[in-house]
Length: 116
Length: 114
Image (cartoon, rainbow over all chains, first blue to last red; front, side):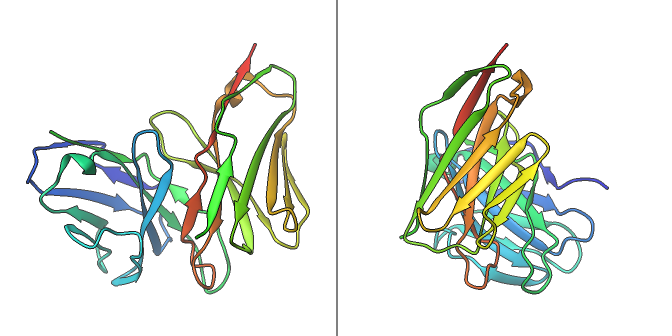
């Protein structure tokens, strides 16, 4: 059973360009979470999605950032008009959560975004 | 707002000793708490989950305690090995109805010397 997959692993963008980060959850997992880790800082929650639904986006910046998890295909985190402050490691996690039962989260290897 | 604090200084111990890491939290009453391990350049890896009604949980050489009165969790690694060297993160679910919206501590870096 393959783990959480993220691509690309490294992404370099110039200021003003768009960045698209992809995440394929573990097989059988329908809950996806995105986190951001800035240099020398901890992991920060960004958004929680289920298939075709955004459940909680309270950690997402109000502008330029969006996320989706379509019925088919990977979850996408999209950053428009990137700025240097967006440089960070972006991690995706998936969970087999069902109903009110709590499960641990399985993290991908991350995408390291560098904005030049 | 909710806050989690872990020992910010690195913990250096000798191989074979027990490592004890601390996680304190404020302004929240979590239903459960999780511990993860993160190696440089990699994603966190889940280690243990402990619920509010559990005082202690064990998995092989790992032990976690959860004191909801003190608002503190302790993470122990017994008979530590150099391969245990990593950053250890504690996390709380602050989402309504335990949605999995985790907040993480800054992490404590453990270095086990042979």
